[in-house]
Length: 192
Length: 192
DNA sequence: CGCACATGAGACATTGATGTCTCATTGCGG
DNA sequence: CCGCAATGAGACATCAATGTCTCATGTGCG
Image (cartoon, rainbow over all chains, first blue to last red; front, side, top):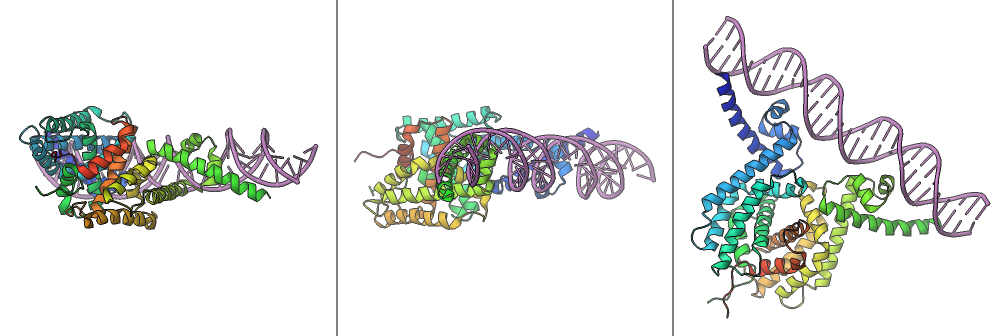
């Protein structure tokens, strides 16, 4: 029966390690396996028993990020109601994963093919579809492509996450800053 | 007299090396000193004669980036005319340095104190002052802080630069995408 | 021509991170 | 109580990048 216990405990620990690693690598993306292990409160040997190596760890983090994003997209119900409300819900649901997302966004350029492009592509497609829906409904302007709006959303989330970590902006304004800038822009609106 | 020749040629070479390194590191931020040397068409030994080490190279790139940004800010004449026009000029002038900027933006979190904060702080202050001027003139909304708008500008420039490098968006739309999103946002405007 | 100097090529030691291994300890279930 | 399995601690080899060194080459300039 030890196999059952093994599997169960390992799974719990694995998730804990993964989240510790995410929290650490968000702040210091070059952290050592040693530092990751210490941050998770385990030894380097145990860390290696969970993840074959640094690559495996990063790929597991990537999977975690993809999962959390897909959960967020599901929870945001992108197909329902006005597109701009869906964007607000999306940013709200994405906020808890913002740190991890910022880390992965920064690493993305390094993957260069060894990345799980399928997962990201699926997320990109769903988000781009939301922007396209907003364009077709007349809510969003059509001279900014869905692809660029999707990129900009990622970029703003990463920027906001880093700025909050460095204390340059207030964390409580996270959603507001991103949504208001992304949807409304910096220009002042005329009062109707 | 050899010292004169030395200084002159070295200065020219140094600049060429610096720009090659910028171009390479923009695409592959983890490039080796060997790769940097090859990209510049010189040997690793000569590269080390120009820059004591990798740190020195990155710091020189940082200085280059700061210089180019300050030149861009000067050329954009941020104090003149409507603030939104100044923002347009700013993005236009910043475009040639976007790749280098994206690289440095990604590295910024790693510096953690060893960075030339004075230079960046001065740039931040000038850009934030522009946004503040726009707020005071009534052009920009006041519920987004100048600090966040500055962060967002950096983030959008880096996102756009990476997206263009990866071919996800068209390079010719660089200025348009950034300025339109930053100033106008994604929402469609009512025709007046 | 001959000198000075920058360069290229490559050897070399060093460092830091990584991956693998062993062994003693702990904790839990039978 | 016994034994199994996971863990922690640490030794160890490996590898990649770095930094330093020497020496031969070549090129320009007097």
